[in-house]
Image (cartoon, rainbow, N blue to C red):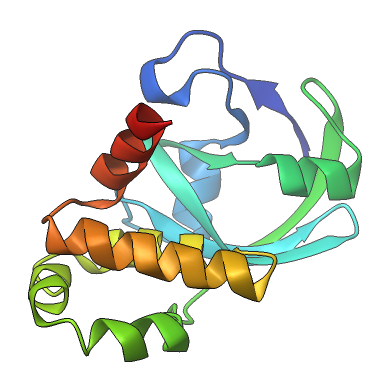
Length: 165
């Protein structure tokens, strides 16, 4: 199926996001009865992906945010048309092993981490896993442990990092 990339203007936390919008009919054929965020896999043009979220926007409409990495790979921008193949992604996300190994040695951070929802735990782990070098990954693990020890969730950690800089 063909879709057009759209971009939010001023839209709260979604300001500036590039996305693909899916109709209620399309979503119900893909995942009947769903009203909350779910994960998909497939292809955008020739780029294969998995683990991308479809987010509910109300009235049965869902969007798939298209981040800069994906836009660069498909060489597309707002108002360009893309070919989409999409299926449910039923695989579960695994937390970064190095992070979990270190986290288990830090009792206060570990205890707070376990109070977070799985999706909020995943924010930390995905940020750590996205590091391009071992040094950056180690720094992110350290920053995360410190934030969790202060009982900060992911967004609070990021905000405090920005304020410190």
